[in-house]
Length: 401
Image (tube, rainbow, N blue to C red; front, side):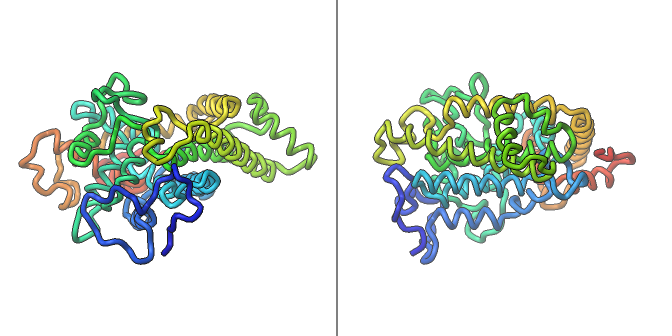
């Protein structure tokens, strides 16, 4: 059968020893449980919508810039590379990479920030919690259950791929230190314990690190192609300066478009090779005997070396002012923010403007449930659909230019 244990390390997640699914199902004769999870994610409606959701540049700015979908595919490729090199279950790593952005709103982080602010009276909005809602409730494709009925290991990795969410006393840690863990996660966890106090599997850690690598490489590529900065500007980052010296030493006078690609592939290669070496050392030092040993070890194992972690920080420090806060990007962020605010206010006041399946029964529920239904509807929108809905409901719509 596909997905055998051959070649998998003892500390890797084992699909044949999975903790199972919330709704029991017969095993597949041709696919492992993690392969089935991956396939269900790919065939979901939420996954298809990623095609028209902003990464940084909105949909009309050019066909060659990344969207949430192309970013997700790049993350999946890197996650599989890390998993295979570390002898992990690469199907689980791929499933987690493919699902990690399912909960994102239209218009990139602007949409999430705006929706979080608007939902603050009712618990806020968190794309990680939204992804869990999608795969456990909002996708309605199967006759026997809501959601995708993914395995425990995939759900666990989806919600805590960046580390534990709380301590054993229930207090938020990491990203959630000093604030509550999203209610959607707590409510689901109350009926299906995902060990929110522990680390996730090595496969989930590989997917999380792959996300960082993909972000660095493709945001540099997109920013260069958009003219927000030049190759010469990147020499301010020592790690990138070294790569550029290497490229132009090999190919003096290389045309800019090829140099940009050569830089991107080297960024990915150096980060991946470093992560494999450093993670292998971390795993080897602790002599883990099972996937649960990894969960209980108390710290992240799939990681960059200190030097490469500094390079990662330096790249992000460069990109923040030069790309994410570039005047042209900020202008569009402000326009997207206005669209999201207008739509939320209108749908909350007049839920009948949403499709029937979304507004049905809202006249009999609390404000909190109505707001959450509106947030669910809006979070699923693509950039184009959100703009078109605004045009349908308002006289003037920002052009996002």
